[in-house]
Length: 581
Image 1 (tube, one colour):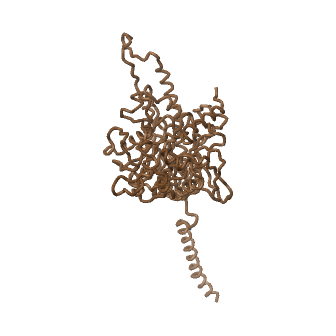
Image 2 (cartoon, helix red, strand yellow):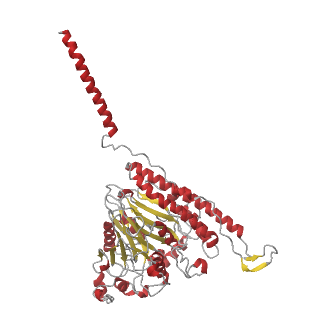
Image 3 (cartoon, one colour):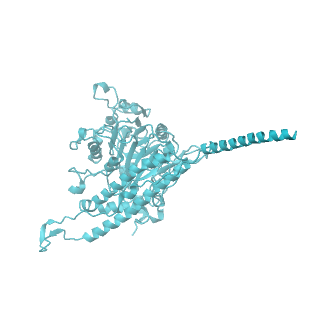
């Protein structure tokens, strides 16, 4: 029986009252990899969009709108506050919730991760928490900006990362913020990190190209002087000073500088729920510096140097991490108090990647997993695509809320795989084979996408868009097909192994043993080779604005023949005329 909608709305409103509006999606983890720290020179931003429950998402392309004044977009959740848009807005990709996602009436669908036609990438938000003193001095604005509206508003009108940061911060200056959030924005040239503390206070810093970052739901920014460039709210320091909660640096060289973490957050806001995810990210990428056990008192910096170059395979593994190989791993210990990175609650997970040496219109890729990534798969969505595959773009209507349809919607297939594979009873037997398969499939795509983009850069722009769209669609369709096949295999094997008597038996005497029977890992018969196939690009068309060399050569031949004919005619005609005379 479906849950009555009025009960759902009442429950959500109660959650907002108790925990603040940010509580709806307050369990995200994010990653940054600078171009000088990555294995291929790309910039990478990654984030999981986590929210408890069954919350389907899809992928869309929002078209460019040319010279249409008077349009607006919502700022707050129910759309009572609207921001005016420029006359022209830009095309972008997004990963929103489906219409069947239960949100308050007229609520926003959260674009989650966006890349526009100018190669500007944005993901928001990782919810964080300001301290009581800061919130008392500058409370949230009830109808202020929220994460569910920010990506759309910013990315549709920004041609550079810097401009996008300025648009985001101007929205907070104008409307205030209804939440406490963290955003990441980048293009081919630079990346920015933005902490939004209270109703009107924020700090944005340009991230160093040779560093990486991993953080859970917590602020980590300390000193602005550590960064090349920054933008801050005009009252960031004075508000703290006038209200008595400003904290300055403890180090002698920073004694006169405001410590943003101590001022607006502080150790009292550091909780294992978030801090452990920050720790495991540091441990995985820089074990030489952070290889020890989790330390609740240690401050893990926002930016740090990785031990080796970081690639998309590393990012994918990190976004699936469940404290693997540590004493905190819930799948081997059975612990139920661990908040991991790779969680069953992800509505979507995405990694945004910018290539530095391609035309901006095709320079960026969203690697998106609709549904949890633990047992799901990243598939490519280029900012050059003209459309998304029918499977990944299909939007479940509001009337179908509560209908779990894994045959038509990829989200449900991946969500079902996760539900069946997660946990100490199933992770090793069913989950690990599924994870291993997707890792092989993703490697094929991570290797294939750069080849596609390189080939596309050498052909006509329209043909290039068609070619990239076709490749992305093929990968999306293949992943959904395989997800359904894997789901069938897991259900079959689990049903086949189902037995309430979990103790082992002697195979000869059938005597019941004292030890629990251990099932062998499920075998996956699918072949990931299809993901390594890169289709041939169309041949480069002649430049319509110039005369082709072939045409020129042909004309020269014709002109030469005409001249020769004329000479011959003169040679023949003159003697004839003389004879006539």
